[in-house]
Image (tube, rainbow, N blue to C red):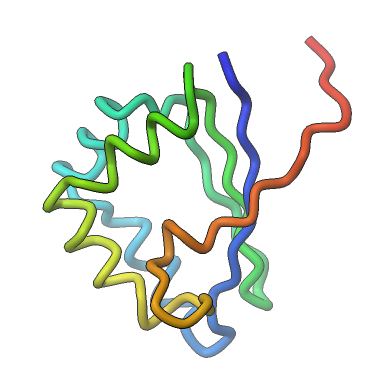
Length: 106
């Protein structure tokens, strides 16, 4: 199982809205993530907008690819786009900065 940690940056003026929307993630989006291989997935958010995510998956690249073509993901990313600082033309889920694992304790 691949352990994945990533960060992204929420606009400071959108932190509360980002938090609110993640308290109400659509059931279809939750199901899509699970079916695409996102397991034990958590998001953490600092008040300044730094978001850190963690998940476990058999293959992160394949999981991202499975989500990429789904209508539910396209709709979710469009909803998140105004809230996240991202490179021009990229969706929020394409702006994840993966962090290398340097230590793990079972």
